[in-house]
Image: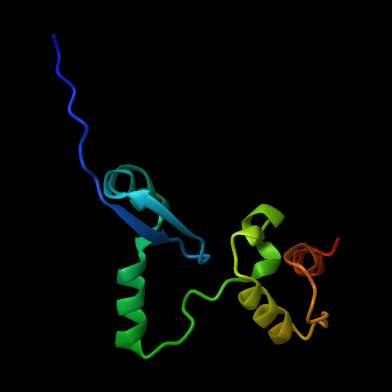
Length: 104
């Protein structure tokens, strides 16, 4: 009879070249995500520090779906809208901000 042992695998945050961040197990990273171009966030952060580059993870929110935008903080959505010169009301909800970005 086979005995199964659950491996204790730590969770890491990884990012792809479009800036999409996700949390995965180290094992999943090594098996799946590494081959898809994802890198550990710490590795990307270290690169930015070494190269004196700011905002290497800058994401074009226009390319994200409404579901992906739901995961982003309101302050970050507002900062993006400010950068793009899009007006919004200070009391707009997250859904309102997302509609401005997605053009709905």
